[in-house]
Length: 202
Image 1 (cartoon, helix red, strand yellow):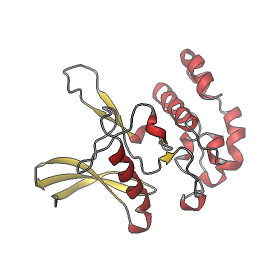
Image 2: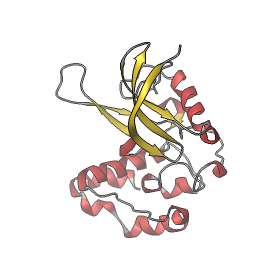
Image 3: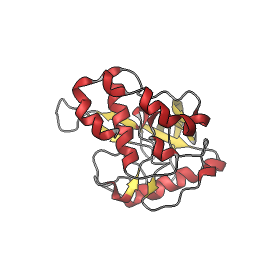
């Protein structure tokens, strides 16, 4: 089915694509976020689409209209690999509650458990965004623990207003990561979350 619409503005840009706000006119009218990428980087979108088609029904994952998409709550055997505030969207409640619904978006860098990584495909030789990655993940040790680490970084940023780690030179991340994890300890900024963060950043 052909969808017609007009790009209104850019919502965000990443290493592997750009997201536009699009107003569609056919077959229905409405506002949608549309992600696109150059052909040379379209492998990320293709993979994301395949993942979306497999997992349906989770209320905390953005919908991909035309196919649909969702992960099961246990992750469905996948690691998101790029959790960060920009990839967590806020939607108003559909049940009348005062609480909004958070939905995870952008599965372009997701990895299936056991999948072999290809470092040369990524901008800095690893998947994800440096400020939210664990040192081990940069070394190629990708597991579900990476998403937990990223979640901890997001919570620290929400509470303190600052990113727990600040890797200004991503190309040197692998060398500096272990040292910075010791010298820039985020626990001191969020005392009441110390027990949780001790487990996340262990």
